[in-house]
Length: 205
Image (cartoon, rainbow, N blue to C red; front, side, top):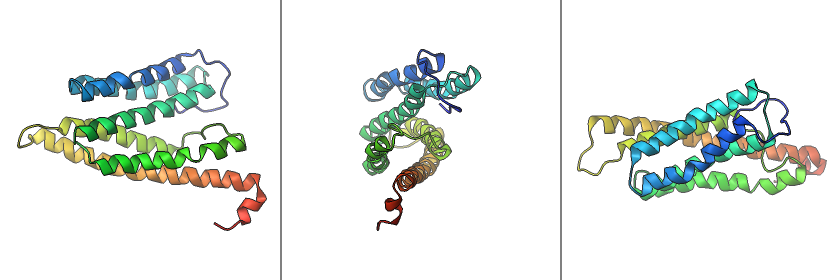
């Protein structure tokens, strides 16, 4: 949710309900991918998540219903969908294991920043950077294409081949932006640390 302005105090809002619905959609989404392989239904859930991702941000700004909970739920839903899709596609051998581990390593890097942010009084996370949103956009577009390109026969159809090309294009851009946003996030945390402790700015390393 791209919320702007100071967060309000109320958590019982329509934008927060939409964000929560996105989070609750993750388990059935993963089950559809790994269980019955109902890829069409899984894609519908993913598309609905993308639509509500835009809608909850628009409503939050329109209705002035920003909240700290909404600012936490929205990126959490994005990361959960990315994680669930990576797990599903890796187990189905659509994407290689190294790609999933490479993307997870970025989240581990950001998680390591959380204790420092809490000590600085910024809570568990900083506001979402536009590069992070762009990375999420690319990855959440890549995965449906890659899922559609999945095939069990000896050859791929023309549409599956096209979906694979688009899917990997989005995946490569998304992975690059995902790490770029992560590095900028770490640099931002370092800047906040230096501002709060002048000795940190002059300390080696």
